[in-house]
Length: 152
Ligand SMILES: [Zn+2]
Ligand SMILES: [Zn+2]
Image (tube, rainbow, N blue to C red; front, side):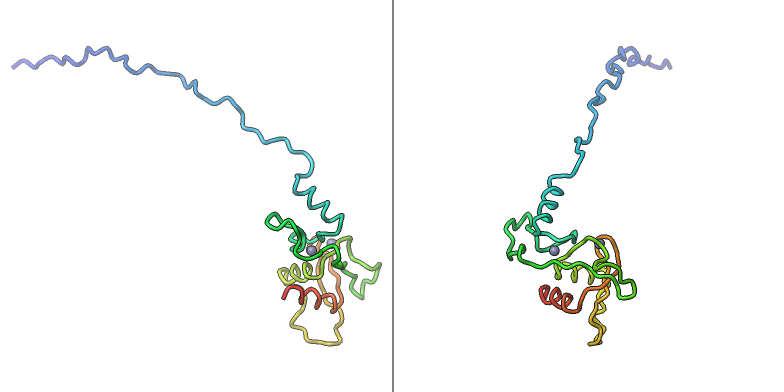
């Protein structure tokens, strides 16, 4: 018995040249250089300057992308600042931030402030915390009610 010679061994064998990985992408992906405020930030700052938007980061009364024209005449809306608590009475505001009453009430509700369960008529101050800088102070019950009504 003679085994047949393996004829397949002489087949050249160089069908797949080993290619160095020369296809590596040399182009570096880099962030676009964007120093300074973005366009949106500039717009919002401008809107604050002219009184359309209050200090609340989620001010619902300023113009939005979907609704560039404000529904209400926000320039006529009053903005309130947070007063110091009676015990710490220095100055007439705890910080430089001002808010539309409804924006402040909305923000305080989210943060768990406002004491709306407290049905004490003598309590003419509503304790709040600035949604921007967390300074604690109070606003008048009237201001709170005004904001709450605007949200309803
Ligand atoms: Zn606002
Ligand atoms: Zn503040």
